[in-house]
Length: 384
Image 1: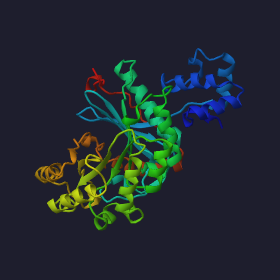
Image 2 (image 1 turned 90 degrees about the horizontal axis):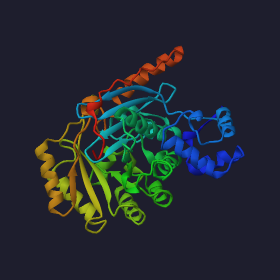
Image 3 (image 1 turned 120 degrees about the vertical axis):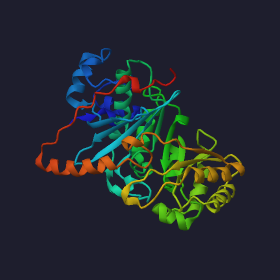
């Protein structure tokens, strides 16, 4: 079996080239062709020696997960469904805005954390993704968008590990992918523009601070342990005090001087003024003014959750309590909810297709649907 070169960061690719009898600078050339130019065929890599290209043809390949489907929201958001084999599928979302393009990337097929308000968690856990399957989402999306929009400059300026899965429970492939994103010979993204979102895997938060510190977002969703135990089961392993201390330690290495806390607004569950006051006390007791920011997320309902979205007036009142206490607070704008691409929705389509995929896989007749039929006018290049 040949090696998928998307599985390697630059150091790994250099080691691979050395095994072929090649020098490190060849790995840098190869890395640029793959990630900066989106090349998938070795014959296209014209400044590589023909002898190296022949070696690569017999030892390596470049392959992102195949695309099953593509959906475009009325707001320009794009959702791709990728086939990762065995009847499993993952979702990736591109969110275009005036001055940036953000890609939301999955790290696992399903999720084992099981947060009550997240449809991915209700889907269950299938497996961890490989580094090639993680970075392959960015590789495909970036170069598809450039071709689709007819531009040469970078389209994706921000990456958030907020798709399917808990990134820090798939640690090594995630960190390897982050290094490719940050590498100047790869995508050259700023550490400030790459965000890992975690439900609170304390030991791995500490390790990430040492290995590859990027922006950190923590799925909080409750101001006390009793409520958070119910909403985010991982809290039973890493309670709030331990999590807050880990966040403080991370700040020593983080590219930003604050941690972002995500808080999904659930009607009658965690959205009362008393909850807001308790949240203020929690955050103030664990850090100085400005050490964190709150991102309030309108809940995106799905049938089996039994939960409802907080009303706009309740969200505004909750935010006011936080802001009056000096805590920077934003309310996330819902994007892509008409194609089930909004926060917490990445599973409905996957769940249905995964069930179908498992049946078809048994028949060994699985086929992919062509997807390149979108309308260019629905997208805007960041910065234009």
